[in-house]
Structure formats: structure tokens, C-alpha cells
Length: 261
Image (cartoon, rainbow, N blue to C red; front, side, top):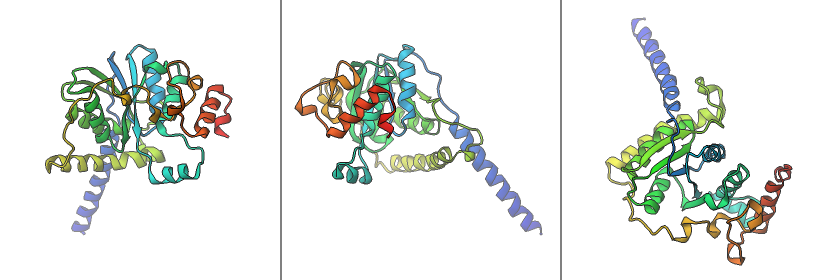
């Protein structure tokens, strides 16, 4: 009986530690401060909404968004010719519709597939910079992204903020998406630390010139019509993505909800 009691007690302690630990993990965003750049990490469309708010408040001079690598399902959809804008296209549209001049939106890191990839891409673009970076992500991702970015940008002044345009709850298990994302984050951090200990992380790359095409608004953005989002976009055949993306961006600009049909 005593052994059973100990097992039950240990199980209760483990549950409290697990649920409490995840709750602690979620709530650690920095307060935003005025910075040189606002950097939006990929993974959620709620993030550019907050980036646009921060830009409007004068918290940064430019907004940088990454270019995620399409997964297998996305590639199959594109091969069929089905309308499916890339994440960076949608994020750019959100920023522009929320008042960020397109000339102030910059792309970095083509085909990034993880937070480490984004950190490496930023290091490649910025070098070992001492700039102030205001990084926008989700509440469950703040801690891990701060650790990774601090590794690759050790001299940058980092402020990692959590977008308020998401449902966050101390009782995180009541919200399906928050629970799914939060539970895997400690495991992802563990994998990162194991790779770091084993020396298997990518080395910090050499800085590339800021005039490289990926730094500005390249064709990889998937934006073809300069009038679709406002001034400052490149034009010409070399910048034309599939016709469906052009139609979708025009629908976004109209703001009548037709892009959702």
C-alpha cells in the first residue's frame, strides 16, 4: 500500500511539474523597445500582424521576413497549379495591408526550414552585428528562439516579443493549437542542445554584402504586380510568379474577402 501511495504521489508531482513547466515556458516575452530592425520568424500568420503594429509605433525602421522552404504537400499543390501562395507572400500582404510600406519590407533566408536556419540566414546577412533586433514570434517559441538567435548573433541586442494576436492561456491544454505547439518546444530545444554539444550545428557563416538580391524584394517573394501591394515592388517578367498568386494578391488588396472564397 505504501509503495502504491508513493507511485501515485510521484505521478501527481510529475503531472504538476509538466503542466506547470509548460505554462512557465509559454509566458516569457520581452517588452518591445525601439530597434533597428523588426524580424518576423516564420510559422504563424499572427506574427506579421504584430510586426505591423510595432512598425507603426516606430519600433523599427524595416520589417524582415524569412522565406520558408515549402513542404512536400505544398510542392504537390504547386505542381498541380492550384492557387496556394507561399508564406512570405501572405506575410508581405498582411504587412502592406496593415500600413507597412513595401519598400520597408525585406526578405532573408531563402528556403529556411527551422529557427536555426533563420538564425544562420540572419548571421549571413547581417554578419556579427551589434544592431538592435526586435524579433517577433509566438509565446511558446520565445525562449527557444532567443537561445538560438543569441548563439548566432552574440553581439546583437535582441528583444524577442510574443505576438498578442494569438490565443494564450495559462491553462494551455484547453487550447488545441497552443497545446500542440507548446508540448513539442522543450523537445526541440533538447535536440538543439544535443546538436550543440555534439558539434553538429551549422557554423556561423561569413557575412554577405547587403546588396545581394535576396536582401531586397526579390522574385522569390512570389509577388508580381507592383500595384497589388503598393509602391516599391520590382516589376517585369523576371519577377512574375504563377498567375494565381497575382489574382489572390489583388483580391487581398480589394479587402472584400474574395480571397477567402
